[in-house]
Length: 254
Image (cartoon, rainbow, N blue to C red; front, top):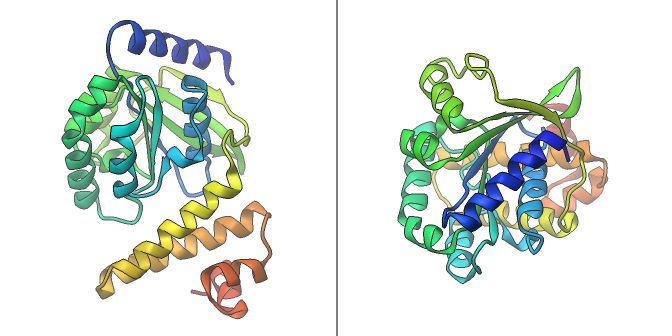
């Protein structure tokens, strides 16, 4: 882990434990850039007991696990709002987090939130609740880079950058590198993610939402193929699709 960033995590951990607070970092980045990996690395460092079962894929999972966590535990809300419109993200993230605010404060938890775009969050969550912002990105096709905005600069970024979705208008507090190492059971984590996606497809109705779910499915298929851990045949079996259908998605024909 980057040395300067690790020092900041140490300070945050001491603050949470010593001053009766909680920590709520937000992680953003494009599909496949590694925001879930970076978030898992940080939460595992803050709480060694953190594992894949706390990488919540849905709001329901998050709500069910939160009341049973011990003090100073870490939990993640991993792109549970992915694929929703900006207004839906703002409303649902705000209502979920604020509704459980008292539980969070009493238990002094470390809560990570991963989503594609920081500016989709409501002002209350983005400015007043989030402790810091981490953006992961690639340089010349190479993953593993990140930027961090602390509380004050994060507020400035949200105010100045929201209209044009501009992450360059406020200088980050620090930059660093991270590895592709996933500190939790990656296979079990990916299975959880696939199951959550299938559940959304089965439980939601409406043409508009189905289009969104298909986009999510296509992203997941492309990412699984990009990772190189599954063949196209295995991916087609996971999603109950034909081999040709998966091939067209990978090629960008669907």
